[in-house]
Amino acid sequence: MFFLGEIIYKTILRLLFVLFAIWFTKDFFDEIFFWIISLLGIYFFVINYSILSYQKFTEINNDIINNTLCSSCKHFDGSAVLCMKYDKHPTKELIPCKGNDWELR
Image (cartoon, rainbow, N blue to C red):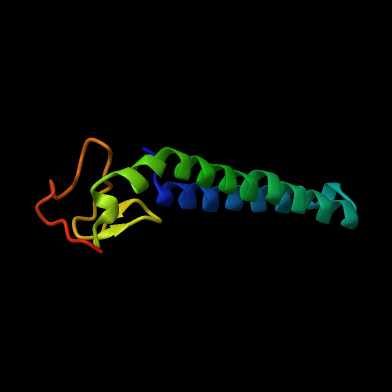
């Protein structure tokens, strides 16, 4: 399974890595090339990765968000695919409350 927190965590780590790489290579480029390379590095290694990861996240969890019992419950958070009452991620096979605490939105 692919979680939203994992995307955020990896994005922060990638940003940290890119910023350190930019900082260590700042003496090798002229100022104009430094800014261009910095912006391209941040876009391709951080922003583009985050966008593609989020698209993959929504694609993988689309069936859970739209076609499960949990998706119509008031305790379900669709943005993180999370049952807020039990703090668990529902899947196609697993409903955290087993349907006992389901409440209509």
